[in-house]
Length: 185
Image (cartoon, rainbow, N blue to C red):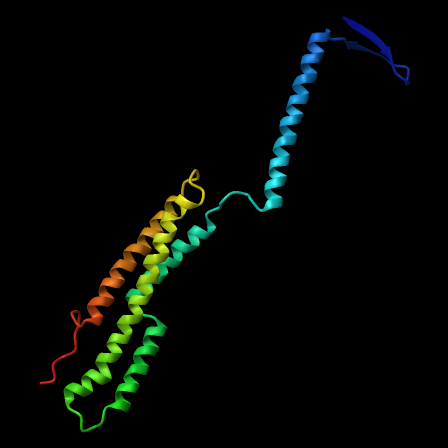
């Protein structure tokens, strides 16, 4: 089923003529592939125009790291806690006269500062706990079909655990169960 054709340059070329049903099938297949490629390109274009490339997990990962960092800060202390304790020490010194009893001086100068430090440690622990829990439950409200990365879960659970430990230690420190003030007499 070949035919000869002559082009403008004068060369002769043999081409094969396909039966009609084969040509129609090839055209249909090419049209189908073109439609699929166009539909896929439209989806990508629409998603990028709307800013919807799918959840990347960057926010959840950042939240997990923040939770763990807040948990560590609750255990080791923070600048805010140190400043609050120093301020409370100064207030205790100013409010206590030199004629006050030793027990009252210890309580005013050191005890209130210790409790201020414990209070700020508890605040950081509570923040670590809340942020970690939010990161862990976020997939249930965001994109339930997309699983959360394992490292994000691990770090968030670490933040929750550090938050619980920090909160427990802050309560024990604040209530003088852990390292309470020495007795004056």
